[in-house]
Length: 288
Image 1 (cartoon, rainbow, N blue to C red):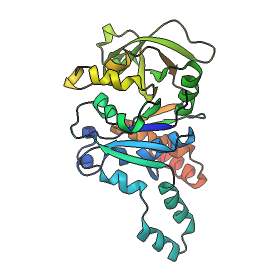
Image 2: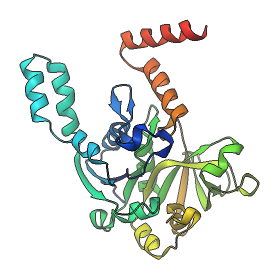
Image 3: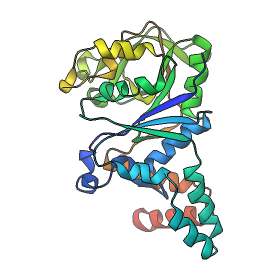
Image 4: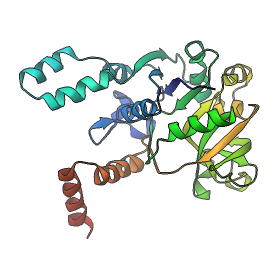
């Protein structure tokens, strides 16, 4: 089982960031000096994937422009001798072979994934949500791919969340404790359950490796919570699913507090010493 393709859904409205997302995709919200979706694409590339399909929607043209070449900008940077910035701009367009398809109606994550069926074909694929950044020493997607190839099954990244947050997530029911490699069988999923009915506090965190069986199951699945086609409802019907508990930090850029947290924490960890010092000085000035 070899994973060579990635799918990144990026068609949502981003209503929690209105009015800024009225004209700008939430996936283009900047974290430090890069838009959120660039971190996601880079994670896929670091996992060895260079064939990426982004599911967009109406008003998402900025995403395509970001990963396209910008001849006028490159010429100006070269003429001004700003070669380090020129390199960074050119690297974006050369990251991977990026394709696009537009989700015509926003009918849920499951519906968005179905739009990838023709591109992915009869192959396993990585699925990365376009508004979620995961920072760790070893890439989350790379870890999932290794697990999927070892067990010949679909694999999901899971995170233990506070119990009061469980109703905001798809939650996994796991079978026993984790194996030596940190993974465990998943027996069922529940989409956004009431806290008292949740089988665990292990939430799906926006990274998956799925077998192509998921497309057939999605096509047969009826709309669920919120009147949308829920990916979780199809995943629970897969023959074999394993979960891996997330290592590192996850930032949901779809909400303002997490976006602010990402900017602050990632700035402190950034390899730019001048930025580190500036952020630390600002925090001390404001809060110490």
